[in-house]
Image 1 (cartoon, rainbow, N blue to C red):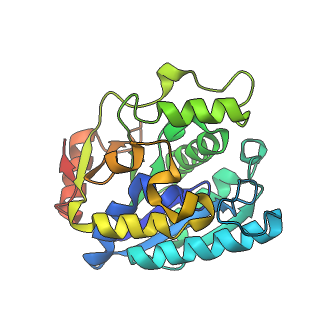
Image 2: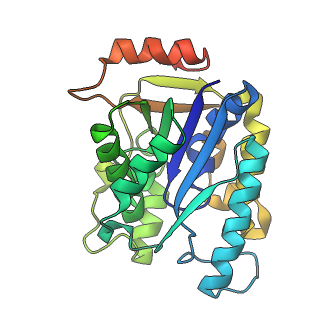
Length: 256
C-alpha cells in the first residue's frame, strides 16, 4: 500500500490543512505518517493548564498523538526544533529529506508558499520541504495545501497584531491564499474525523470548541473539501503525468 507523509511546523497544523486527506488515505489502507518540526511550546494555552513551555510541549505532544490516532495515522514523529525560531535552522532541509526517505513516501503533504496565513515557522517548513523534494532522488508527489484568497485573512491580521509575524511581516495581505488549485479532495465522508482531530488539540481551543481554532467562519469552511497545488520542477514529471499518478494511487485525488 502507498505511504503518505505530512510535514508540519506545529502540532495542530495537520488538522485544518489536510486531516481529511489523511483520514481517507488511512481508511483506504495507506500508511500515513505525520512529522512535526516542533512541540509548539511557544504557543498560548487556552485549556487552563500549566502555561510553562515544557509542560505545554508535553501536552501538545499528547494532543498530536491523539489527533493522529483519530485520523488513522501512525504515531507522530516530532523533531523537537525550537518553536518560533524555525526560520534560523540549518538542518530543516536535511530532516525533511530524511523523513521522505525513511517513510518511503509516495505522497507528501505540506503547507503552501503562504504558510496558510504567513506564520514565519510555516514559511520555513514550506521552504525545507520544497528544497528537500527538489534534491531527493526518488521524488514523491508533493502537494501543497491551497486555501481560497481571503479565508485566512482574519487569522493573518490576528497574528500581525500579536507580533509573531515580524515587523514588517514576511508576507503582505495580498500574498495570503491561492487563486489556482490542481487537486480537490472531497472529505465530507470523514469530516467528523477531521473535527475530532481538531478537538484533540484542546490547549489551542477556547472551551474545547474546534471552531475557536481560528476566527469565526474559517473552520466550517474547511470541512467539505481540501485543495492542493502540485509541486513541479525541472527533474519532476509534468503536471498531467503527476495528476495521472495521483489518480492511480487513489481516486480521492480529483482534478479541480
